[in-house]
Length: 501
Image (cartoon, rainbow, N blue to C red; front, side, top):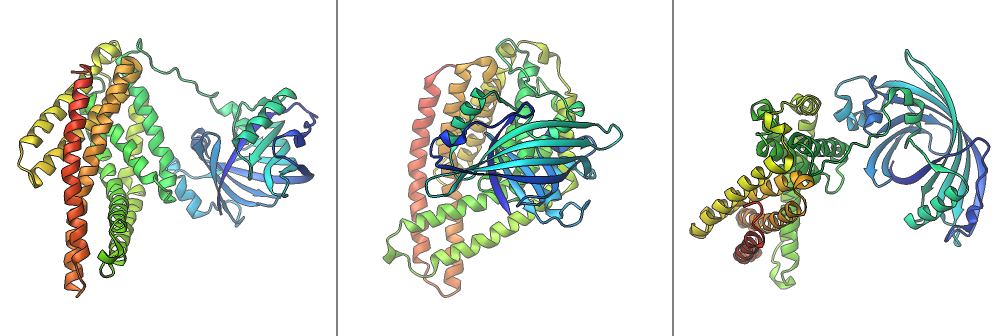
C-alpha cells in the first residue's frame, strides 16, 4: 500500500493536555482518544545515510497499520509512505530495499534504534462523519542501538491530514502554538533518538553577490545532486513526471560541469560528465516514449472522427507500450548498475573535495557570466546557421543543436543568478522560452518519423494508412509554424538586454 501523508509535528511539555480541537474549521466532532501501544525497529546504514536524506524505514507492530513503513520526502511537509506486511524481523522487503539503494549502495540495512510509543489518538470529523485529520499525542521511549547505545524519552504531538486541507493544518498550528506547543526541531522520531549522531538542521547560507565563484557553482551542484538522488525512488516507483525531472537534474549537473570548467577543473570531472551524459540518455529514452505517445494520441483526437480510419489509436498505443516497456527495463537496469553507483560516488567526492581552479576564489560576479555569454554566443551562431540552411532535415538538425546551446545558456544563468542578480534570472527565462519552442519543434520532427513508420506498418498489415498521413501532415504544418515562432522568440530574446552579450 502506498499513501501520501501530510503532517506537522510539535514538541510537547510533559503532561500537556491538548486544547479543544472541535474549534477548528470544518471540525464538527472529535472521536477518541483511543490509546495505542506501538513497537518499532528503525533500519538504516551504519552511517545513517537514509535519515540524513530525510528517509525513514521501520518495522512497527501495533495500531491499525502494523508492518514495514518506508517514508520518502516529497517536500512541503508531505511524504510518500509505502507499507508492506510485517514479514520476518531483520529481513527488509526487497522492493523497499531497492527504493533506498541510491543511498545504501550495497551497505547493509540494519536496526539502528528501537522505540516504544504510547499514543493517544484523536480523529477530527466533519459534519458527515468523514475524517479530516488525525491528532496523535505520543509518549516516546527510544533506545539507540549499536556501540554507543543511548536512551531517551520525550512527548510530541502530530497532526496528519486524512481528508482536510492545508487550511486545517494552518488553523491547528495557530491553536497549538497558542496553547504553548512549538514546532518540532526534528521532523522524524529517529532523528531525535539519534540526535547525538546527527548534525543539527543544516541552514547553509545561500550564495550572494559577494560569494566566491566556487561557492556559487558548488551550491548549484549540491542542489541538483540532492534533486537527482531524491528522484531515484520516485523513478523506480514510476511516479508521473519523475523521469523527466530526474533527466533535467542530470542535464543541469552535466551542463554545469561543462560550462564552469574554469572554476572546477574540467579534467577532474570529465569522467563524471560522461557518466551524466549516459544517464541523461537512458532517462531520455524513457521520457521520449511518454512524450511522443501523448503527442500523437493528442493529434489523433483533434482529427474529426470520420478521418480516423482503421485501428489507429490501438496501433499507436501498442507501438508505444512496447517502446516504453523496453525503455523502462533499460532504465531500471541502469539504476542498478555499477556505472550508476560509481557516478553517485564520484558526485559525492566532487562535492566533498572539489578540484577548484584559482578562479574559484575570485568574486562570482566577475568571473561566472562568461559561461552564459559563451553558451549564448554559440546558440546565436547555431540559430544563424539554421536559418541559412535549406528547409528540411538539415535545418531541423541545426535547430536541435541551437536548442541545446540555449539550454546550456539557461542553466548557466540559473547557476549564477545568486551572484548576477535579476539580469541573469530574466536571461534564463528568455533562454527557456526559446528552448521550449525549439523543443516542440523537435517533437514534431520525431513524431513525423514515427507517424510515417506506423503508416507503413499499417499498410503492410492490410490496414488503411490514410490517418497516419494526416498526422504526418499536421506535424509538418506545425513544424513550419514553430520555426516562425522560434524566429520571433529568438529575435525578442536577443534584443531584450545586452546581458550577457
